Picture 1 (cartoon, rainbow, N blue to C red):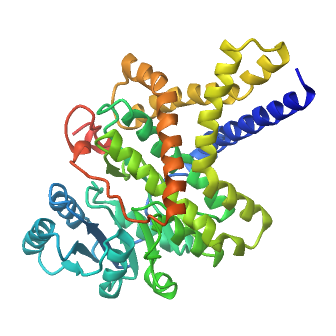
Picture 2: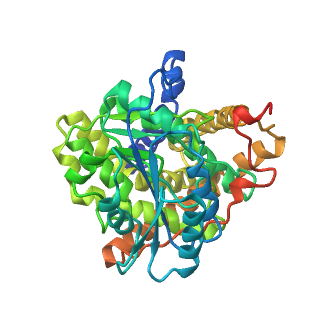
Length: 427
C-alpha cells in the first residue's frame, strides 16, 4: 500500500476515533463519581420563595396540546407567577384554546398575539417579553408536561446559587412509539442528565429550548432572543456565556419537563435540520470568539460543530467497517479501519446501561426488545442525523432559513410508553 494513502487513512481513522471518544467522555460526565452524580439534581429547597415568574408558552398550530400544558402550568404550587400564552394572529384554533384556558384560570394567564411575519419561535418570545412582570422569565413549549413543584425548586436554586440562569431538565418520554424514539429519548437523557453539567463547569452553555429560566433584567439587557436564528436557545446561551453569566443546571427525574419525540421520521429529519442549521448560524455569528479563555473558545467551536462532526463520524464509521469487512486490504489498514469502532461500541454498551438507568428512574420495566431496538437503530439513526446535517449546510448556503415546525400530538401523556413520575409510583 502506498505510504501516502496509508498516512491519509490513518489520520482519517484517528479523527473518527477522537470524535467518538470525546463524545463518550462527555456523555458519561455525570457518572464519573458519586459526588458529581448527586450534584446534577435539584437540591431540597431550604428557603421560602423569593422571586416572581413569567412563564412564556409559544404555540403555533398546537391546539391539540396547548390547553393541557397551560392547565399544568397553572397548577404550580409557587405563590407568585403568571403564564403568558403566545399565539399567531393567523392561528385561530390555538388562540381559541389559549383564550378558553385564560377564562378558566383568570388574570394570571394572559394571551399575547404575535403579529410578526414570517412566524418563528424567537419572534414570538420577543413579542411577549414586554408583557412580563416577573423577576424571572421561563420558557416552555406548547406540549410540555411540567411538575407543579418545579418553580419552587428553581426559585431556591436562584437564591442559593446567585445564578443569572437556571436550566432545568427536559426529557422525551415515549421511547417505544417508533424505531427511532428510543435513541431520541436517550439523547435527551445523556444531554440534560450529564453533558450540560460539563458545559456549566466550563461556563459555556448552549441552553435548551425550554425549562430555561433567565432573570428578566438580564434578558432585557441583551434585547431578548435573536429573531433570525433557528437555534435561538443555543444562541442566547452562547451570548450570555460571553458576558460572564452564571448558569445553574439541574436534572431531577421527578421534576423534569416531559415531552414527546417527533411523530414521524420526516418530522425528526426536519427538526434536526433546523437545529443543525441554527448551530451553524451561531458558529458563523462568532459571538463565542469573545469568550475569555482559549479553553472555552475551543469547547465552543467543538460544540457548535458537533452535529456535523457526528454526521461525519457516522458516515465515516460505515466506510471504515465496510473497508475492514469487505475490501481486501493489508492487515495494518484493516486494523486501522476498526479503530473508530472501539469507542462507538463502548458507547453502545453505555447506552444499554443508560436505558436501564432511564427505566429505573421512570419506573418502567425494560424489555429485551428495547435493547434489540437500541442496537438495530444505531446505524440508521446516524444516517438520519448525517443527512439532516448535510441538508442544514445546503439550506444555510442557499439562504433558506424558514422555520420548519415540529408537530405534537401528546404521545408522552398516554399509553404504555409514558412512564410515571417517581412520586406517582406508589400513589
